[in-house]
Image 1 (tube, rainbow, N blue to C red):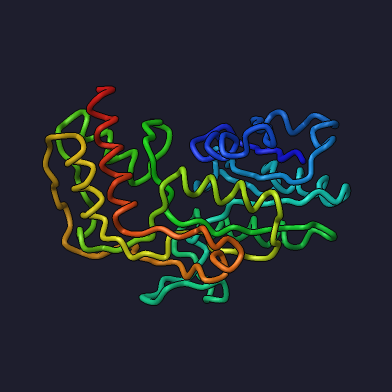
Image 2: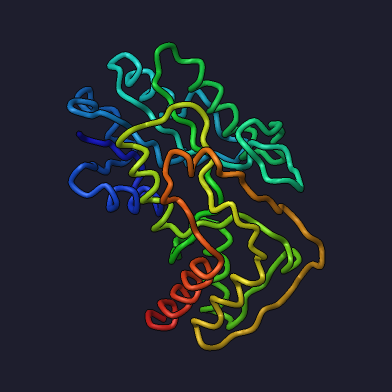
Length: 266
């Protein structure tokens, strides 16, 4: 078995590490190689076009559908890492049949990518709709919840939240997400699958856990309004992977560990 992981970013590197000798990590440019799919049983597309989420993005220029068409022709399974942002906002847990209705450009573009992939004849496609994956990431090119937190905590001694600390979101430590995606790549279920913890975690709790691990700092609330809250229903994920279970203590411990690493590395 050989799983091709495309995208050398935060999550792609973690998935390749979880796969061990079964995985091969490449960047986007490598997909132009005519022999890139030789010996491959599954592709995990973990990268993203640099213009995705901006008006400059064009689906015709995105390399993911191009490789997917080649995978379909060779009967290679294809797992696409999508986003929960394709769903319409809801106070209820979002299952795979929940109404679609992206509220931002990134979500609309990812939904367009999903539709393009789903229309490829013969493609053995798994569409993973992923919750908020977090870990120790400080890449200034990314603008995730955790990259922003770590940047301001390190530089200014504070974490600033632009939403109420009581806003709940579905978070998954990168190590858990990568392990689950690696397992799914070995036996792709096909269809749509949510990948999250299924836990409604207040963002303020994780921020305070990072500060606790860091050993100093303060939490600044810039807005009292709850914004962009969501929880994924993960019944199907757990039916396929019974080990895909997390609890609140695991999430908190992961956030504390990130704060400690930030303090150690400066």
